[in-house]
Image 1 (cartoon, rainbow, N blue to C red):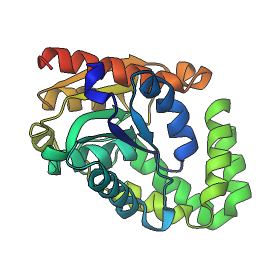
Image 2: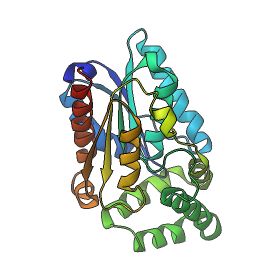
Image 3: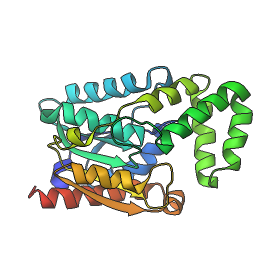
Length: 241
């Protein structure tokens, strides 16, 4: 399995309101250990989805004719996986951490949370909204978002609304995914329910799921990448790769 990613450009996309700093700390240690070339593009809050797609296109073009690996966290995982479905010849593997919904967001907790945060930021400003976020979040997550929200202000509310409207891959689209996919969900995460991770691996033909806890992420974000890689290893083994 390590040969799948050795020397392979691997593009990881951040979650809503998060940034490339966190996604790098989450994925780079495990991926560097297997020889992957890690790329973590910063989110462009004024064009979040288009910016992510451009980053994937640029990486694929630079790596051609070799394939790339793609993935990310939450909305980043959704955009990367959708791109992998649409470009099967360009993708060797997918790493999806904390997928938030399947298909249209509807009333998915992560979409509701993004809309609420966007409204709070617009109506109360960055300082007050950040203070309210800190009061209701685990300390490690509050620290991460305090930093990343400030980096993306004042366009951050627009990015949150755009993410909440995004249509993630449907079960039918996931079934068309040709690359193996490793999925990680946190068993105690109400915003990114483990049921969504189960939906993704049930729909995809070369997929496995690993579960962790929010406290484990807070202790060491690198567990996300390590467990995604472990799940990818399981999926590749099942597929005989």
